Amino acid sequence: MADQDKNSKVTVPKTPKKKRQIFLPVFVGIVTFLAGVALTLMVVFAFLGRSLQPQSSSFSKINSVYQTIKQNYYKPVSSTKLINGAINGMIASLDDPFSEYLPKEDATDLNTTISGSFGGIGASVKQDGNYVAVDAPVKNTPAAKAGLKTNDVIIKINGKSAKGFTTSEVVSKIRGKIGTKVKLTLKRGTKIFTVTLTRAKIPVTTVSGKLDATDKTVGYIQISTFSEPTAKELKQQVKKLRKKGATKFIIDLRGNPGGTLPTALATASMFLKDGQTIMKVQDRSGNTETYKAGKTYDNGFKVKEKTVVLVDGDSASASEIFASALKESAHDQIIGTQSYGKGTVQTVSDLGSSSEMKITTAKWLTPKGHWINKKGVTPTVKADYPSYAYLSGFDTSKTYQLGQSSRTIISIQKILKALGYSVDQTNGVYDESTQAAVAQFQTAQSNDDSGALSATGTVDPATGEALIEALSQLISDHDQAYQTAVNELNK
Picture (cartoon, helix red, strand yellow):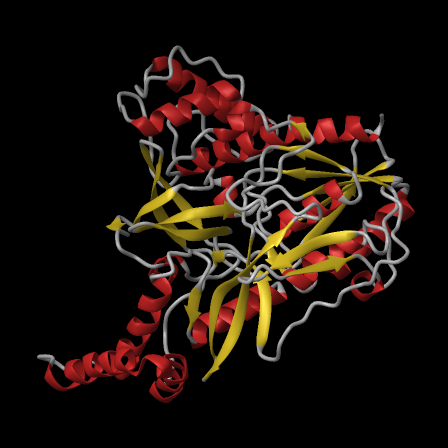
C-alpha cells in the first residue's frame, strides 16, 4: 500500500436534500425494477414550467399538444398517462440507459433495493434499442444458475414478444410471486434460446464469507451488491474470519452489478490508508471533486491484511470504484477479466407524490484520473472461469428425448461433455449416445444422494434442473480465477 499523505484532507460527499447519488443499474427480480406509474399533473407542470420558462414557446407547444389530445382525441386519455409519456419521452431522448423516471411504485422499488431487501430472479437489465437486455446476473440467483449472461437480449417473455418494451414493462411481466415460473426467450449473438426461471426470494445479506477449504489463513469474502447494509456486513465478516485464523483476504466482486456511492466509499476506505484517493467525480463543467479514505467513511475500521480482488464482466459501477481504489491507491492485485465499464453517476431527485427521477449527472474517475466508462477495469492478473462456464442454459421446463433435434439439445450435449459423460457429437440430434449419457448422469445423481432420478435417458424437468446445478458446482470446483487469487496471496 502507498504511503499516507498526511496533508490530505478528507472530502465529505455533498448530497443535497432529497437527492441521492447512486451507481445502481436497473434490476429485475432480486434487485427489483424501476420504471413507470404516476406523477400528479400539478407537480409535473410545475417542474416543466420552471425548466422551460426561458423558452416559453417550447412550453406552449407541449401544453398545446396536451390540451389538443385531452379535448379532441377520439377517446378519453388519462392525464397521468400523458404526463408520464412526456416525461419518459424527454428522458428517452438522452439515450442513456441509466436515466429514468421513477413513479411511486418504482421509487419504492429503488428504495427497497438500496436498503438490501430483494426478491425475484436475480439479474439487472438495461435498455438495448427496441429490446431490454440483461445487464448482469447476480451470482447464486436463479438467473445466474440458468446461465444468463451480460448483453443477452430478452426477445420474449412467456412466449410473447418483448419488442418495444421499456424496462418498466419488462418488470411487470417478469416479476411475480416467489416460487412461480417465468419463461424468457433470449438472443445471444446469433443464437436464440429459452430458459424457464423460478422466482425466488434472495437473502437480504449482501456479504458472505468463509475460510479457504485447504488454506485456513485465506479468508474468502463475496459481496453481491453494494447496498445500505454492505459496509456493516463486510466489517462483521472480516472480524469473524480473523477470529477463525484468516491473515489475508480475497474479495470477490464477480457478478456484482453495483450499488450506492456512500457504500462504495465506506467499503473501499476500509482497505486504504487515510488520505489515499478512493475516486474522483467530475461534473459537466469539468470541476472535479476528490474522495479520500478516512474515518468519515470507515469509522476507523481498517483491513491491513494482504488483499486481492476478483472481478469479471458483470462487475459494474460501485464494484469498479472499489476495485479501482484498491488497484491504484492500495496497489492490490485485481484478478479476473475486464469489468463492465460503468463510469457515470446517477442522482435521484424527489419530484413529490412519492415519485423520483434518476438521471446521470456526472462521471467518476479512478484515483489516477482514468474514466473506465465502456472500457472497464483491467485486471493486473488475468484469469477466468473454465470455458464451460459460458455454456448456454436451456429451458428446463420442457422434456428432451431420443429422436428429437434442436439447438437446445446442443447445450445439453455440451453440458454432458463438460460433466465428463461421453457423447458422440454435439450437433443437436438426441441420439443413442446422448440418451446413454443422460441415463448415466441420472444414475450417478441417485447414487450420490443428489436426488432420485430414474435412469430413463430422457431429460425431464427434474433432470434438466440437476444438469444445470451440476454444471454450476463443476464451475465452482474449477474456478481458475479463485485459485489464482489464492496463489497470489501466498507469494
